[in-house]
Length: 336
Image 1 (cartoon, rainbow, N blue to C red):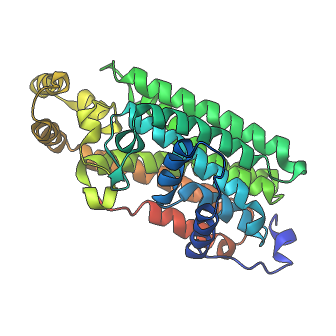
Image 2 (image 1 turned 180 degrees about the vertical axis):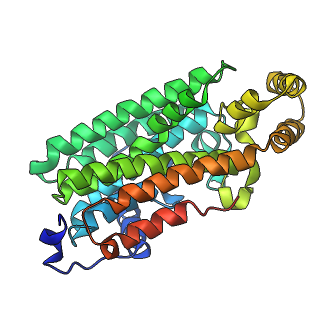
């Protein structure tokens, strides 16, 4: 079997908690000594907010499937996290979001220009840190990273264009979130596997696994934005409704609504001057009447089951993959 080459040596597998401590410590000690301080303060701030560090953890876990010395790729893992937070700075600005991880967003604490410029700087820092990987892997890693960065920008553009359309199909939406969310999770796993000299077949399976987990993860975000709570979610509930985001929830509500419900949806989406809490309440009520919550949960489970099959096909013993599987399970158990 494909995993026999690796099973000859007993690898020490680190738990997700151990890996989180390692990556957090590394990010915490990153030095931003270049002036001007005002450019780097927002970067230090947003990285200090923590979070689950999902993307660097996935990279470290993929690497640890084949090799022990995860410390050797901390620069690449941090690059993924810095890049992710760069996208958040710009996303929060474009979405008019006030809170991120229960703290004020950068454009609120500083200003719009700070969010743009510090975000741009984070992009450069991410490439600088990613390029510190071993030279033998440099081209492959940067090819994956660059293609992923392009796809994320394409996904964001689709997301913005969808704001002005009420005819977005479910297929269009799934492609948008694949680009905007899934590809970075998948690339994190793929780069980790590349850096560990994993077989190409495993690398591809891990990438595809990441795509499916990313789709399930983003749909769960859609669900949490309506049915979660601020303390667990880290953002105000109903933000997607207020911004008229074409989420899986709203798209399916449009498709399933009868004439009266469609009229109500059109009315509330057109309103920008009403009390925001009333708009959230009314749109959520329509979702409840249409059974959108259960529909979304079913779709999440479909993607997660596909991901589980893909992970089972990676050519390693199940015991070796248990930490990654457990971490994926935890991502699907966020509170609704």
